[in-house]
Amino acid sequence: MHCHQVRQLLVEYLDGELDEKTKAELEDHLKDCEPCQKFISTYKATVKITKKADPGEMPVELKDRLKSFIENNLGKEMTAD
Image (cartoon, rainbow, N blue to C red; front, side, top):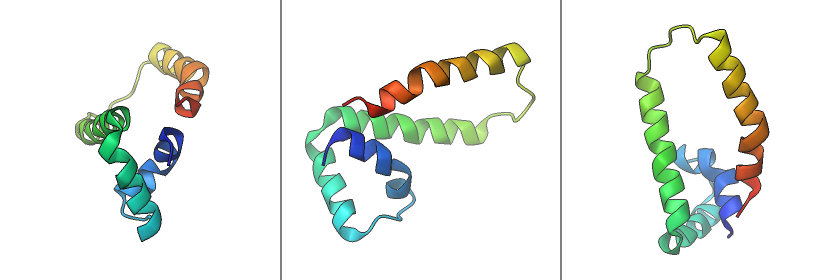
């Protein structure tokens, strides 16, 4: 398994929705891949923090900047190894 595959399967993995073979392959990869370990740890922390966040209205300027950042950067990062 490669890092990009781990990222693609992350949500299913954390939700316990992977079949046993795929789960074992992913966990085997995680044993030796520090970047993926950090990625999953950061993802888990982000979800935890987000659940605690105040759902108040985000300023329009911030929404626009965030949307632009995601469109320009996130896709590139998620496909890189």
